[in-house]
Image 1 (cartoon, rainbow, N blue to C red):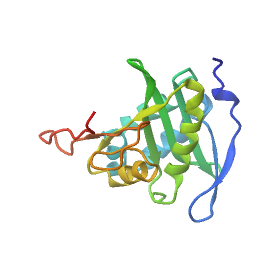
Image 2: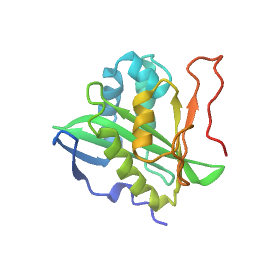
Image 3: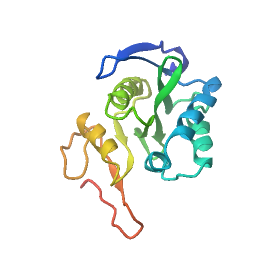
Amino acid sequence: MKDDTSHRPAVHALLKDGTTVRIRTVELRDHDQPEGLYTEMSPDNRRLRSFSAGPRSARLAADTVCAPARRGHRALLAERAGQVIGLVEYHADGDAPHTAELAVAVADGLHDRGVGTLLVEHLVSAARADCITSFTADVLSENHEALRLFADLGLATPGGVTVPDARIRLLPRRPQDPYLRRPR
């Protein structure tokens, strides 16, 4: 199947408050904007997103999201007035060809406005071209916003509603906490 990652047109969508955002495929030339998004995040938000609050995590996350387009990896961004306000990406799991790991990042101050929801919905639609039918996400158990996002989208979380096409793995809050996983 032909990789159409770079041929997907940008679309406009409305956030909960009526603000219009543009959703489009991340391109190589975008590197500075995603890096800026991660750099401007509070250390706590960056830690919840990438499990590391250090300044180096911003560059590494931007390197990953702006990697050359390839089958099994897609990344979308949401921008408002030319500023990146959110990112979502997936990486196919080599051991499970129809499964991909999902990651979402939303700028500080813009949580709970629908940015993450719109991005995930558009990414799931794009995933069909890669024959992805199931997603996983590693989420710290204290990341209530991400858990709420996934639950609102109908993705399964331990103790929550289970649907056949998605699952969430929770990571422990502290090293001594047990992993929480959805029963298989």
